[in-house]
Length: 63
Image (cartoon, rainbow, N blue to C red; front, side, top):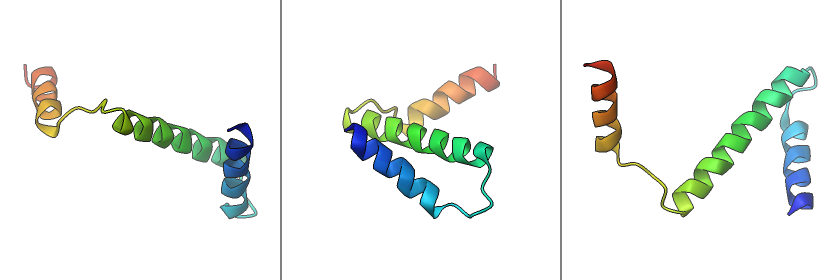
């Protein structure tokens, strides 16, 4: 698992432009991490239906 993660990070960095900054790399790693977390949540069935999200938004913003 660890070597798989390292390979993913290396591949990500290789795909970035040569003038990439450390901040750019951090951002891309952050987004990749968030997407992996979301994928795992979907696989585990930890999702909220769209209509429920809309109801929550209405309750929060349109009191």
